[in-house]
Image (cartoon, rainbow, N blue to C red; front, side):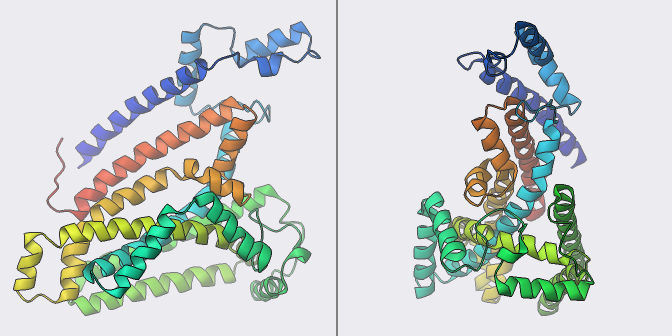
Length: 411
């Protein structure tokens, strides 16, 4: 396995450099002169214009510019933003990254879990009223025009009903929030011992630290759940007892994660961030859930026609075991690929969502950079998309071998 991973990592490195070169060449082939937006200002004297051109490296031959571009990314130097000069591109991107990961990871995992469970159930009960209802609903959400649907959800829950905020990721003015939100925040503040509500939410640094802490706690909780479930699968032979352990692991991790943040000193602001994510997460989950349900159902129907499924049924294996252990595990392969690749495109796919919900993530940073022609930020965001896509393909290949015992790694 390690030989296979090392070979794939080598291929990924070569492909990433090719990707960087193509990005540079596509940018260079654009009509017009990119430097014109910085040196075309008549208020700038000619001497200052020449200094700007030299500092940007635009006076060098194209092959030298390409070499410097690849060399800088090799040393993790993405350059400086033209629109927010002299701020580093890496600072802009990695400030927005936790916000995008928190939003889209929550929606993607939730939609995957719900969609896979629903898909395997309706495929097993083909022709039933449940299947027809789920299929009609899934087709609607899968084919709906997403910007319209996102605006509809925002209008309904934020503007019309007023349960949730219209945009952004944290409320700067607590007086503008609904009474039930302030009441719940007061309860959390008294429980955690934090009764102050000023001097914190206006700080971007602390807000980013909060996002990082929330992501880290979710990762730790997921790891604990995975370890408990893995231990139960290895040591417990009875199927019913194993499922009890799975439910207990899920309950323990959820209660532990909730208790940690309720007792946290900044629990008020953690709840405020979660409150802002409800509508965008709900919107993304409904759309992604439909696609996962349809894909799982299609994959399950193909798996149920296999000979080993007929053999298991002929042996008298319980229907639930046939569905969950024999059919669903093999039907999980294309769904897993879809999930992993979806996680890799959170930046590109987040442009519309983050713009509609005013969510200051990577997608919105990319759109802003393109709008104001901030080329270094746009290049950095696109390079990050490329890295995530390559890593996603590697993870999908490794997961295939664990999900399907018929697959073996070869050097």
